[in-house]
Image (cartoon, rainbow, N blue to C red; front, side, top):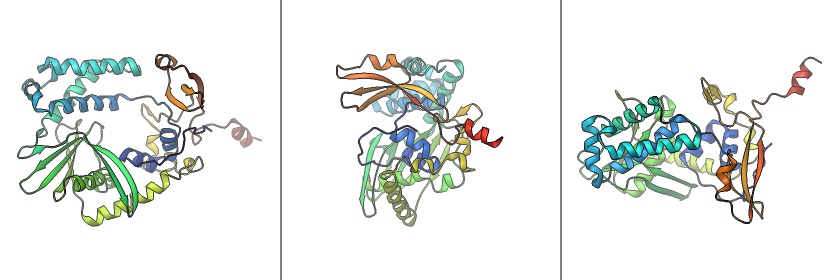
Amino acid sequence: MEKSKQPVKERILSASRLKTLETCSWSYWCNYHLKLPQKQNEGALRGTVCHLVFEMLVKKKHKKHYNKVLKANSIEGSPAIHRMVMKHLTQMEKSFDLPMTNQENTELVDDMIIVGLNCDFFGRGGKVDKPELEFLLDSKDPKYKIRGFIDKPIVYKKGKKIKIVDYKSSKYKFRGEELHSNVQAMVYTLAAQKEWEGYEPTVEFQFLRHPRSPLQQLQFNKEQLRGLEYYLAHSFHIVNNFTEETAVTNYAADKKKDAWLCKIGKWRCPYIDPYDYFVVVNEQKEEIKKSFKKEELQDSLEEDQKIEKRSYEGCPRHKTNSEDILDMFS
């Protein structure tokens, strides 16, 4: 089994860390403790490009590009935005060996951007305030720390309301418990109450792959948010006492609602199969950087550093043990 060589320090929660912890303890171990390199997927990369475009167009000085794109109903309406998108897709294609510049991906990114721009992009009657806001909630009672980013807060002084916009590039919208008890939305609500005291928050998820009905809005009461804080305190204790033994206690494969995260269709969890990778270490044996490609590490190598080849053995829950199979026939 892989060993974590990073020095122990306080681990601060995030929405993604919480979700991984809930769904699969082994995936959590690989991602946040071993910090293994993992293959990117096209969907996540498309979402990154869309975020970059929205972050640029929300600025007043780029309003003319927003107008051009909407008028043409395509990023091709603004040569500058089109070049920016293609530049990032091309870089991603080279870095991750994925067909990011093929017709399917470029058209999908274009469509997703148009959906986002058509969702009351500037907040009619309100004002976009502090886009890409980073927050840190540090609570003493109950004890927890959690940080995150808010994509786009829109403040409405009339009625003292605030809408927290969060872009989603996933294929499926939230439903059931994932919607009504959405931890990410609750955390955003807590952060908004702290940053904009006296304002009533609403969290709006904008699903960019759902042009006909992209919005899901959520609000939470005091009791729900207080319950969330105790959940955060519980999770904060777990992540700061997480061990190799904890990593094998909550596999996604053993839960009906999460088993699909292991493999479904073309999707496979990045930690399900064995693979080799490379890591830069210094004289103190501290791990500096990891990658699948040795050449990516060589350019930034310093004098006191070297590159080592490592092997990841794959997820124990899915690993076939030949001895166990032979025992079945003995």
